[in-house]
Image (cartoon, rainbow, N blue to C red; front, top):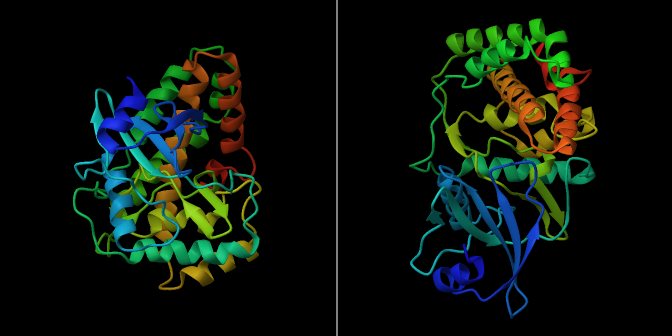
Length: 306
């Protein structure tokens, strides 16, 4: 794929491209594109099936929601290009501080205001809709069986926590079966941890909308209620500032717990799989460190047991 020619022909952009850090998504790649007028764009190739996230960004931008990078449409007005095996998008490049370890400080309130603005926009058709089927319970049990006969270090750690993990899968299914589902659905991000947040002189920005869906607000709010979205974890003061900015009704404790459990299983299964299958030893070691954190003190599995 000649990305430079593609940007010129389909977006009208002549740009110099350099590879950028795309985070820990193995199915994504990001480039920094600098145009002759000095404007900078983020060019992202994602796995197929996430175009709805790009439409969500365009929808939020059209509603002037602050803190969402503007989408650059194609010359024929599309939010993204559908390519063989993936999708390509172009958005405003945000230059600033980011990552799990960043300090928001007084900006936790601003982040709450941003999340409230996202949840307040009108509904968007074409997004996935919460169906209360926890997708990770089956893969988690399959992974547990797979780990039983392996000697890899991550398999040893999994087996030491197998009973806890399977109990979390059982709790997730019970929660899904008993929740009150007669609640408003809003546009949710689905992964608003600090790895998807950038700060600059203008404020707080939320990026990577691949997981956007129509769902109860607790899908996002569980991250902040339990505080595990940052490293170190959010303090009580951080949480208070966020929810002061967010305002509105009190989140439902049962739905908060459900989304914590569902995310715990997704992370446990995916990081365990990476720890077994990643080609590079360095990547497998990184996955092992993350997995140890998920099952350790203050990790998402431990939080689900509280």
